[in-house]
Length: 370
Image 1 (tube, one colour):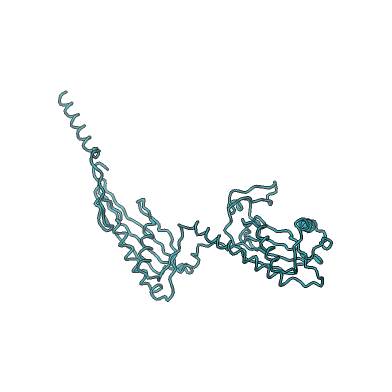
Image 2: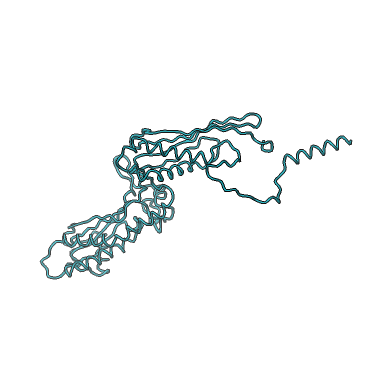
């Protein structure tokens, strides 16, 4: 019985020693290390010094390629994600980030990269506001064109103009009536008494007559100003004809906040939805009330589709991380890691340059971690 008690105590002591935790009273310490300095924490994967070395070696190799070194123009490079094929959970973006920083540092402006992730929301807001500041100039352009191409009249009174129907006022995510009011105001300023707009009540009667197919000659107006807002990309091509997007496609394209006006699937009213990122234009027509023909029209661009810019890329820079990992039945592990990069011509899909960095490390795992 005495021997059994002693054996139990020894086993408990051994287990307690093997699973010992750090002293809770030991103060925390932080050592400041250089990125190239070893931290002595073990592990068989790449260290920070490897990542820095990779960036230095690869940036030098890229700048020495004939496509970059022999070009008189700036080489524009788009980044494709690095693929991680290893057993390690890592931030693979760190490799391209460090390489991009090194290339920007030493290339002296010979290469340019595209911002593909961060700041895209702010960039969109800036570009949209810049477009909106130009709407007044666009309204002046339309007004000048309409007045210059308005048919001459023998009557001494100014031409009476009504505001006709405006198509697709909600399709572009902008206030169509406000924009047309800018056009109307610009026409009034530039006409110098040669043209005036009728009241909103008269314009309403004109719109009703046009909707019902009634003649316009007896409504007391000379011309009708009509318009249509166009959003390129709302329709998609199927074969040789264009078809309307399905309800599901419209929801995916225009956002989830829309209301269905009735049971007719072709009739949708989009309210307070996200502004679709497409090129938006306004087509303005001046219609003669006498013969109901379009006497002149003008199409202008209001907003351009915000593009990432990578369509101008000369090359694609990508890579992958691969590893050959081995482990014994005991505590020894080994990893051979290769980090490869490729520079690809996007038009031909040819690999113009490729290089790799190799590393191999072996480690022994402590007993407590087995």
